[in-house]
Length: 154
Image 1 (cartoon, rainbow, N blue to C red):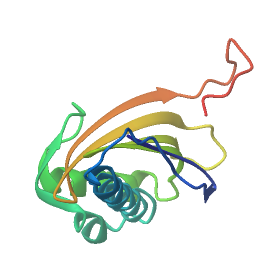
Image 2 (cartoon, rainbow, N blue to C red):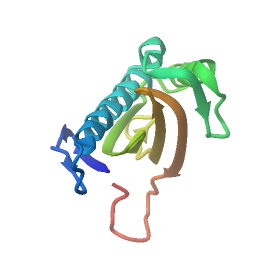
Image 3 (cartoon, rainbow, N blue to C red):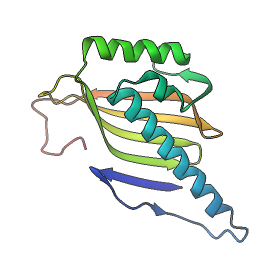
């Protein structure tokens, strides 16, 4: 399992490797890093640049959406980005952390739809097959103005 933390600039990844005599851990970590890079590029192209076609280059033959408010497939993603482009053209998502476990990439994100607001804390989970995104889950929580503690959500 590889955990990658990101805050502004990339910080080097640390890889937890159990004793593998056949070298499969090295091959796995290279694929995990490729998966992470694909998801980060998808997110930047789609959510921040709102370039649907560039983002969809990272999506596989199927795209199963587990968010009950979003439709499956490329057209569902296209509609979501169209909504962002129309209603929140200045929205921006900052990836605070990324985690990789095999074919799964998990992002911890601060998504701000209106500049000057606190936005939402989001955990996005992507499943990849053959280096392409095929499934997506997310959990979204508004960042409160008056939290019950002094801890941040990031």
